[in-house]
Length: 136
Image 1: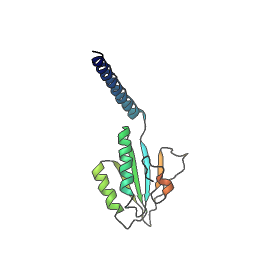
Image 2: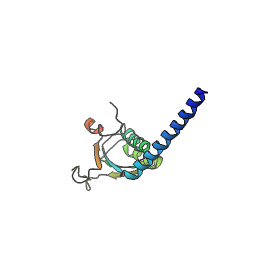
Image 3: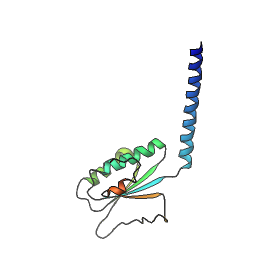
Image 4: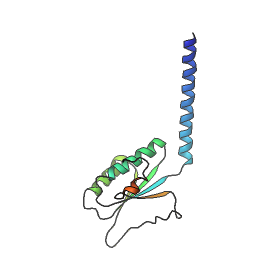
């Protein structure tokens, strides 16, 4: 009889915890703004997919949205094909901006202008630490 009471109380507590977790996730989704990452790449076919997928997964698990802008700085490898494939596969707000000799894209990294934009150069290990899911 005591054992049955523990099962009932335990089930009730588990249900209450699930309701609170769902509510917290909903409130967090509605209160939090979008995050915007700008990834600068140059021949980063080994890193670009990992970076985009980890950002996508991290914010999906949090119930938040993320905008990812990839600025290619003249890659000659398969980076561009990977970015195009990821944009179709993941259905993200994934923007690709190529740079040319005539049109050099530089976005300000001044934090006073917009603190919600995070600039990451994939070739710099210290910048990779800015990603929420990182590898060592």
